[in-house]
Image (cartoon, rainbow, N blue to C red; front, side, top):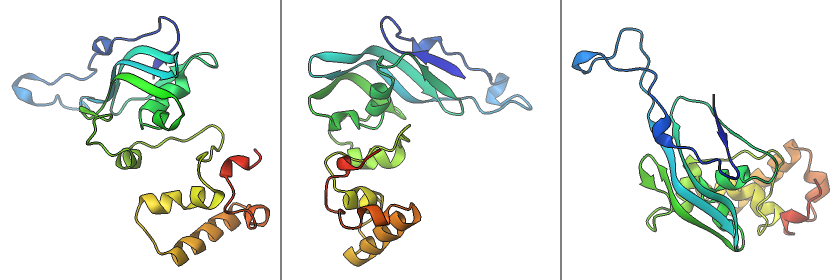
Amino acid sequence: MAPVRLGRGAGADPRGVRAEHRRAAGGRARRGARRVSSTVVETRDLTASYGSLAAVKNVSLAFESLKVHALIGPSGCGKSTFLRTLNRMHELSDGASITGEVLLDGEDIYAPRVSAMQLRRRVGMVFQRPTPFPTMTIYDNVAAGLRVNGRPSRAETDTAVERSLRQSALWGEVKDRLHTPAIALSG
C-alpha cells in the first residue's frame, strides 16, 4: 500500500514512484513477472477550494493501476475533498473551485468536452456514511442510478424505486415523502 498524506506541506512527487517489474531485453517480460503498473489517475498542482479556503493545496500525485493506495491524515485535512475532485463531485458544492489538473488515463477530466455524468460512470465513490444528493428528492436519489444508465419509463422507475426502498426497509418511513428533499432524512 502506498500511503498518501494530505495537509500542510504534504505534497508528493509522482516521479518518485518506481516500477516494480522491469522488462527484459528485447521488450519481453521476464518469466513470472507481472504486468508493469501504469498511471491511471494523476493530479498536477491540484488545489481545491471552497470560496477563499483552499482545502487541498498544490497536490501532485500519481495513482498506478493494480496498486492499493491510501490517503492518510487527520480529520479536516482535505482527504474527502481530494477524492471528490477525482470524479468532479467537488464542483457540486456551492463556491467550489479547482486549479491544476486531474488526469484519467492521460485526459484532463475538467476539460469542457468531458461529461461529468459520463466520468462518474467510470469513477465512483463509496461514502463512509450514506450521503444523499442534497438538491434531489428521496425519489430522485433512489432513481439516480437508473437514470444514469439509461432512461427507463416512469412506471419502471416507480417500480424500481419502491422495490429498492422496500428491500432496504425504508419504504414505510418514506413512502409519503418521496418528493421531499433527501437531505431531510435522519441519519
